[in-house]
Image (tube, rainbow, N blue to C red):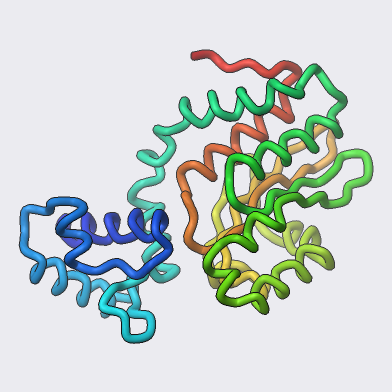
Length: 244
């Protein structure tokens, strides 16, 4: 993809993540002060739509990223997104250290999930080592997101899958200790193809643990990737300190 088109797509994804509204060429020109005209931006947005990276919802003049648009953004920007790690670590520590005092591993898992729901407006989940069952928090978080407010039926379908066979689905996926992202139709069950899933898998005392978050397809990818991996590190560690 040409550099100009790539910059425009990145700007659209970043703006859509923040606003949850279709992004117009005029908005981009004003917000990012690109060294080319609004007409040029509009033409490139049309090209990106033809290429499958954007789509036009309803009669809006703006565009919204598709699954492929989000994936391209992540492929291009993942290293940049994770530069926020020091800031998220400090925020995570501030919340986590309030109630962390070398607790048993199950309690650490509960605490980590609780912190994730405060750091991200999504559902957080993890396997509980003692029972090997899945634990969820944050259903109220995603009910506040525009996507689910506008479509309560979609939210109902997501909740049903989480409650019934979500762990079985996770066990069928290729997941390792690094946070992996499944966007839109990459999710193998129809009820969560409107969502983004970020999940990792690691072992505690030889027991496999799934840890992650589930939310709208539009999300703050950098912050959420970092948050999941920090939560993983806390659960695995004996202490709770990071170097500045």
